[in-house]
Image 1 (cartoon, helix red, strand yellow):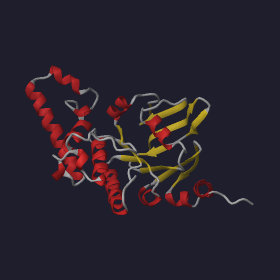
Image 2 (cartoon, one colour; image 1 turned 45 degrees about the vertical axis):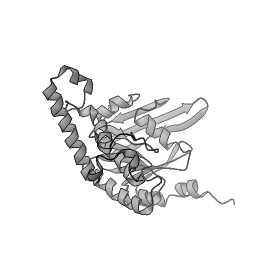
Image 3 (cartoon, helix red, strand yellow; image 1 turned 120 degrees about the horizontal axis):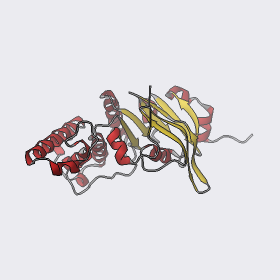
Length: 260
């Protein structure tokens, strides 16, 4: 079953077409990879699916509902969350505070459809209960990533690999149905990347579907169930890792083609 899909999505900036009629799909319970050379349109497609940009034409569907043009705040409440290629932590706040901020949409509302400002109309004791709930939820996530002992450290003092994990933990704090990861292994050493692969599998196993952009082909081929390949804004292939790595169009896009 497709949890998320686009239908002939196009994003043009003046005369430049960054994404051209791409029909992408991500299935429930799967890890879906989005790959392609630099400038292929991967992040543009991500931004149009996650509410940071609006398609020029085409549609985006989530759980069968048309979400085209919805902003990122609304999509977060619907169950979509993401990270970014460049780490965007609150560097002068603690590890715990970073994760608690990520869960603020949950406050006092099990279905995530109201914001924290509603607390103004609630009693002091109710607010305290909600704060404790956020704290416990955040600590469970830190335990999941095995960094609970660093909860009071400033985010900026964490090693690079832990900062990447913290950003993913913050994205999971809103209890998403689907998680978008934009180059999660960027800047990681091989050992950190292996640990990240195991972590992404564990996230999938909790019931959260994952879509990721990544240039590390070892990671992509080892953890993705399905892969979509873009080149010059167009989808050139879609399939299993085995199908993708043997696809002549994909090989040409990455390695080039000899002149006859």
